[in-house]
Length: 148
Image 1: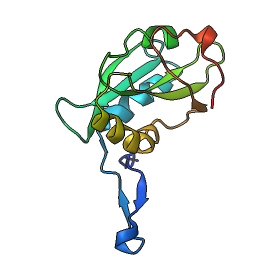
Image 2 (image 1 turned 180 degrees about the vertical axis):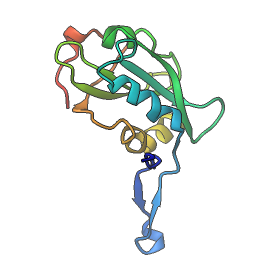
Image 3 (image 1 turned 135 degrees about the vertical axis):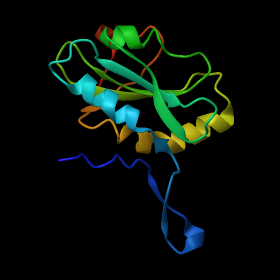
Image 4 (image 1 turned 90 degrees about the vertical axis):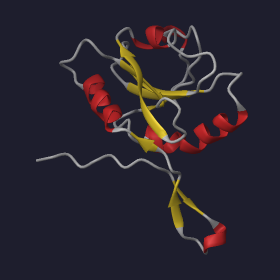
């Protein structure tokens, strides 16, 4: 049975339209859900995290920027200096899946705002997460803090 496509996008109500809901406009490419399925696969020991970000110069398309093994410790070393990224990771201590949004300090204001508007739409594609962590460069699993 073929799997239904992932529809991403936070539904927003525009008060000017009389309450008609509209999408946030984010387009999460199918590769994201494919790679996330590999991260969640217990038999796959080669992947335990994924980084998601803007595809090339697109303002709406989200794709896989990087993926790998090594948990929180590894993914925190891959965070870009100026680009916002979403991600998901399997915690090695308990096997739980968590997601995150990382927006660096020197990210342009318009891109920061657009990214925050897309947050729910992108993170909803990462099915099976137990919560969200606050990601930062150099973060290790021992100092992740509370999963929200």
